Every structure is written in structure tokens, then in C-alpha cells.
Length: 226
Image (cartoon, rainbow, N blue to C red; front, side, top):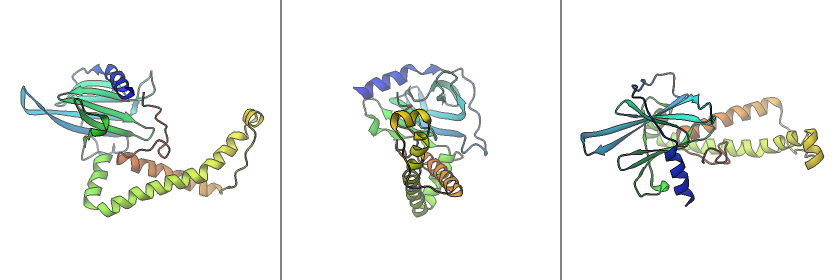
């Protein structure tokens, strides 16, 4: 029931497009723009229909603060919405959702199927997701190790960084008065904390490019899943 309610809300957020043409993907956009494609069959179009989902991570909704997603039908602007959203297409719908790091879901779900049966859309070859997928095909062993390294880095950052964060929060006068203080057993030097933050950021990007997401490891607890 919760899944159907969420899907209904996401469908209601969709607004019709204005027909403008899809802008070409530029070489400098792999980390700032995501683009995925889906070809569907259409009774009145023998060649089928190509849907393109385009997310510019510098394009925020002024109302909700969420990323805005644009959907193009055969290259013409078809619809848009703030993420998360669901777009009706032939035979089903495209479901899109984001975390703080990027997209965490961009799937085609056939009519009557559940979200877990969704099919991941095809990333544009020039996009960050497309380049990462190409690496996975060319060097699967390296790809697996990159994925494992990202998880290990994020777990390490969580275990080492959380006690220090709690100590800093409880040092605030209001928190100290109402919650008490906490002294971290770990105190890393500044260079180590900086290295850990940079490594964790790269790990989050790696997981976003491969569409892997966990609410604890990847920086949000489903805040944009309404």
C-alpha cells in the first residue's frame, strides 16, 4: 500500500514539457549531468519511441530544493518533475529518485509489476554512469575491486568519523546541558581527517555512478523518497 501511495504521489508531480530539443551531452559534464535512455514499442510508431531522462545536478527546484528531472520523447521535451518522480510511458513508467550524491534509481517498471522488478535504463555512453559501465565491461575484476574499496572506505569513514562528530555535537552548550557530553576515544590528526573525507567523497561518487545505494553508507536516510 505504501508503495502504491508513493507511486501515485510521484505521478502527480509530473508536468508537461514545452517541446524544446534535447541539448547534446558535453565532454565536461560526466559528474554534473546524468543521462539515460529507454526504447519502448509504440503501436503508432514502427521504430518505437526513445525516452531520454536528463538530470542536471546544478538544476534545483526553487520550491523543494530537489533535483529536477527532464524527460524527452524522441528528442523533444516531453515532461519534467522534481525528484523523486514517476513518468508514465508506453507499457509502464519510468521511476527516478536521487540521493545527495546523485541518482540512486532510474528504472523502467512495466505496468502491474513491482518496483523490485524494474529494469535499469541505459546510461548515455558519454555520461559518468556510461563511462563507469564501460569500465565494468572492459575490466570486470577492476570494477569489482573498485566497488569493494568504496564500501570499505565508507565503513571506515563511518567508524572513525562518527565518534568525533558526536563529540563535536555534544560540545555545543545546549547539547551538553540537555544530553551530556561525549569524549571520543579516537582523535585523528587534521591531515588524516581530510584524507578520510576526500576518500569518502570519491567512494560515494563511485557508488552513485554504479547506481548502488545504502541509506547509511551513502549519506541520506531516504529523505527524498516521499
